[in-house]
Length: 159
Image 1: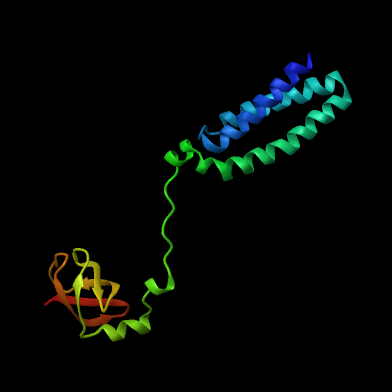
Image 2 (image 1 turned 90 degrees about the horizontal axis):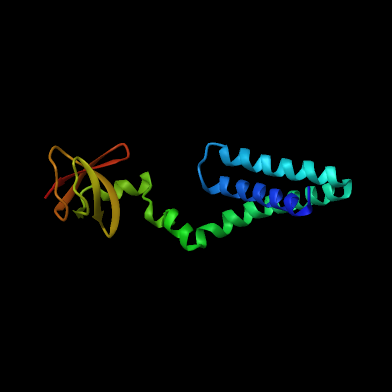
């Protein structure tokens, strides 16, 4: 077996392992990668012990590097951008309303942002709050008033 075939098996095995990271093949690509690397190691050690250790060293260095770089760089490629979901906006502490803040909303007025059937979102005092409508469905962009708190639920009715 020539050095060309040993390097070809090594490259094929490394490519199969890289593809396994991105393509769900239920382990078939890993089997192909293991077979390619196994054949490269077998024929390299059969050629000479020094060649075998060089091929083993190359595989041990390149395999983790290609997986790490592939995971880091793939989302930035055109194909990766099409396959990956966009990043979510992070919720900040200012977006959250704690239980202590909820008592201040009783009796205040606001406007529904989403339809409340019975739960939805309303803007009260310039902040978005999860609310629950009392009794009926409330359309969006309707004036509401906060009636009471039921635990951590803000109960509202249409004004």
